[in-house]
Image 1: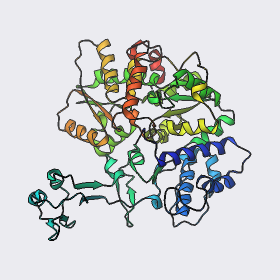
Image 2 (image 1 turned 180 degrees about the vertical axis):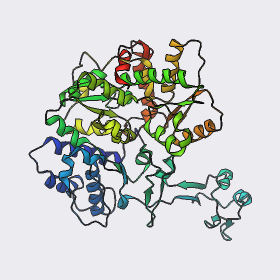
Image 3 (image 1 turned 180 degrees about the horizontal axis):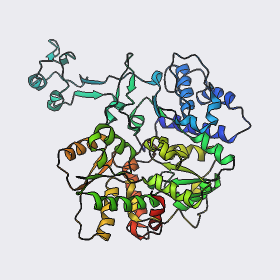
Image 4 (image 1 turned 90 degrees about the vertical axis):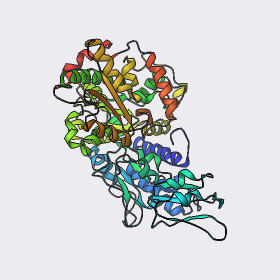
Amino acid sequence: MRGVETRIQEIRRRIFREVARMAYHTEWPTDKRIEALPYEIIPGEVGNFRNDIFLERAIVGERLRLAMGLPCRSAAEHSPVSENIEAAMREETYYTPPLVNIIKFACNACKENEVMVTDGCQGCLAHPCVEVCPKDAITLDRYNGRSHIDQEKCIKCGRCVEVCSYHAIIHQKRPCAAACGVDAIGSDKNGKANIDYSKCVSCGMCLVNCPFGAIADKSQIFQMIRAIQAGERVYAAVAPAFVGQFGPKVTPGKLRAAMKQLGFADILEVAIGADLCAAQEAEDFVKEVPEKLPYMGTSCCPAWSVMAKKMFPDQAECISMALTPMTLTARLIKHHHPDAKVAFIGPCAAKKLEAMRKDVRSEVDFVLTFEEMTGIFDARHVDLESLPEDPHGVNDASTDGRNFAVSGGVAQAVVNVIKEKYPEREIKVVNAEGLRECRKMLQAAKAGKYDGYLLEGMACPGGCVAGAGTMQAIKKSAAVVGLYAKQAEHRTATGTEYVKELDKLVD
């Protein structure tokens, strides 16, 4: 639903803005403020979005807690919204799993998987739905001729859906579960959605596809702002998908000016780290495929790489061990500024999961999405479009590094480096978007179909521009990222100055 301003987006942005305001207004007692906020966000006596105003406020309360990095509670727990609010002052609170949470009392308990006849059924004479059903699950109403499906017999094959001339039969799936490429979402005993965290890779696709806004992830808005206020030198590392996310007139120079206005020490483009990643993966591919490994999968998308290692453990060594662009950029910043703290600003929920890993936590201190960052700008009344251009823009990165944000861009960047350094080497590439397609690609690779190939996996259909923390329509994002990438002075990673520092950053 990116690019469509719904009531869910309205509530989410308000939550992020209010949490940012709480962080900035240190004179406010945080416990009292968070207790008052549900009544300010949902005022009056009549619900705005649901028919029960008390339910709305309870949901807002849990959303506020998650945005503070605090754990989500169930409806059975009798405690104030401000319970254990002092824990939000500690950075480690955020790292307590799970990252992605279902607010159970916000869930609509949607049907998991059902083929149903709608009012569009005309009771036609042909009734092909009856003829094609392999289980005799469809019968006709003797009075009006309309079809009826016996759910006990139905096997959800979808044949009746395909043959209905009126498109009156639909196959309805729970939206969050349908969007989950690792089949991690089922139902609890009350019919509410439930996440199997042993499967979940925190891609966030359930979050953006739930039409009831029942799924939310934790945030570090509060902790990052307080770090800046405490005098920490926090550097913003901005993912390549940033182009256009903060408004069509917000140039890289305006974004840099806005970030500095918020108190960031500086801003760096993670496309720099993408160039470093492409160079590292190119070397690894040439050295290891096919002599040591049958194929190599890219490493930059954490949801894809975690899924591959969880679901195909015997193929785990085939996923590149190269550091991700986020981690490489953070290392580069801390190499030059040892006392710095790094905030990754990007499109991705799974990057939060990556930063939770102990080996990455020392590199990346905060991870925020573009949507969360917008809440901070709103809290400080920063009008990005009216700001003067910072003459330095963001940073110098290659066209290929900036194109990491779109599907196919990662593999192309690696291929271009190999072509420059090893022109005699032939590279075969296959890529997949969405975890379900990534699983199919890995299954084929395991069967030997892609021996000698470079595999690019992207958890989000469309690439990083479709991440759970984005706000812009996906196709539009891909287009503006492509235009911005063409403005780079260098086409490939090997032409940038930062690639010379790769050896200093990789153990």
